[in-house]
Image 1 (cartoon, rainbow, N blue to C red):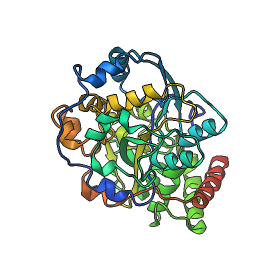
Image 2: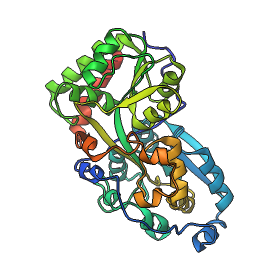
Image 3: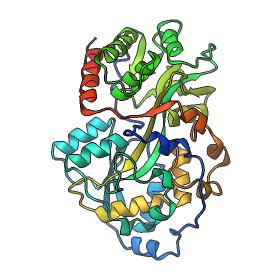
Image 4: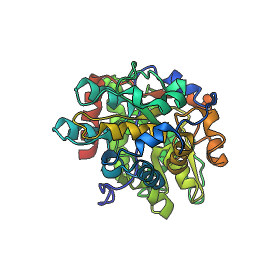
Length: 376
């Protein structure tokens, strides 16, 4: 039975990218160095310190190191107002419904393009993003969803796979098929999947030997049936609570994101798996929604967190890959996190993954499949 509390909205994050971005990620583990331009004595900081006001940040929950909030306010005088969403589609719906006043948001790459095309984003002012310009890894510039770097700045990147408690699950699964069979078998009622259409449908497509981005109705229908067959054996369908469920031992396996897998493994015996059949590669990005009341503070936040020490704090908290140049991160990031291949997967692993490149028509097919899965 699915836990009746699966719908509670209070924790994590994640996302995916548009067509052609795979190349940008395959080498995302190397770069050059540059000294920080955002220190206490810099003119940038002195200017930011006079800002004041409020920054209204709409984000995935638990997606910012609490220390970064404190440091940003102390250094700039800007106070934070926080609201949270649990899916890119929830963010989209809120902005399309006319919500105003959000100064900063962090959607996934594919959603950047959707929001921009709908006139829901403000253009960035790169004259206010000098630290970003100096420290952003070139591999994350001119992403396919924003080829002119007009609307967004990369925040984090990562993968979608599954994780399991190694002290409870003894079978050592390495494939999506093993994940599904174990869920239907000895661990029925102790497994969760994300409350996410692309991740769940895409992962089942990969399991069946199809592309993560398949738009063939017959293939999507087969993936839908796999999910429907799996549903009676699930503990929860959640993008927010599965990490804590695994830590508590309430769940023993979860379809989820690499950062959460690494976070669980830091507290309990656990392993994060990028399935042999393939899966998803994603990037999240900073954007400024239309109608922002304090776009200056939004630019200041983005520039502030691109200082390597601040960005390292973020990666050490979320366990998601940083888009800051690797050589800048190495001196300041925790050595174990910097070397963690769940956080920064090697090129050989990334080659088997696909960025999200689904067209609007493919999205409609997935939406219908998901609706049927949820109603089953």
